[in-house]
Image (cartoon, rainbow, N blue to C red; front, side, top):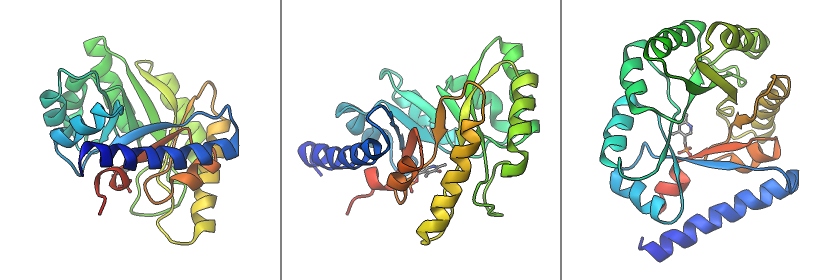
Amino acid sequence: MNTLEQKRHFDAIIERIERARIRVSEHHIVKIVAASKYVDAQAIRDLYSIGQRAFGENKVQDLKIKADLLEELPLEWHFIGTLQKNKINQLLGVHPHMIHSIDSLELALALQERLSRENQTLRALVQVNSAYEETKAGFMPEEFSDKYAQIATQCPNLHLQGIMSIGAHTDDRAIVQKSFETTRSLFEQLPDATVCSMGMSGDFELAIECGSTLVRLGSILFKHK
Ligand SMILES: *Cc1c(COP(=O)(O)O)cnc(C)c1O
């Protein structure tokens, strides 16, 4: 794709987001994080050049490599994958804008320890497994609110902004919708939360209609046929 084609493709996606957003409310704002795990630094540069600023990676090593290569650009990096405790130092070295995937109290405490030692803070979302799938990370919906409060109290250097989840892995739209509604209702009970991160290439319009404020788009942006 040349730049013009890429711009048209991107505009068409933004148009779809706009239509879903307006169905919720004219005041409802949705942010795009481009999940760039499929592509190299040059493809990120290309998308940046047509207006995208926020990018998400799910592996610390890849985030580090791409952030270093693109250091001169004012990009906003999101960490969206499962974080292993032995990668915490490397992640914090990149100074990401936000981590979406706090999925255990242990991880939160380990981050807190490192952050306080470095006198650093980090915006964070707590992940919920609202689809109740064994393969997915995150707290169960029943325990979510308590865990969120616990993390907020015990980890002052993690600045909690809200919730993240991955929609149910099925073609049954009603089940996907139910998982998004579960996430949204937990989000609404959180004190001072502003970010409800849900929706990917296959389900972002439904996620927005269920109240998502941030969609993480990968294949639809980067893997067009
Ligand atoms: C890859 C990834 C996405 C984007 O997935 P697509 O279906 O390609 O849009 C979103 N969230 C997370 C956590 C991911 O790892």
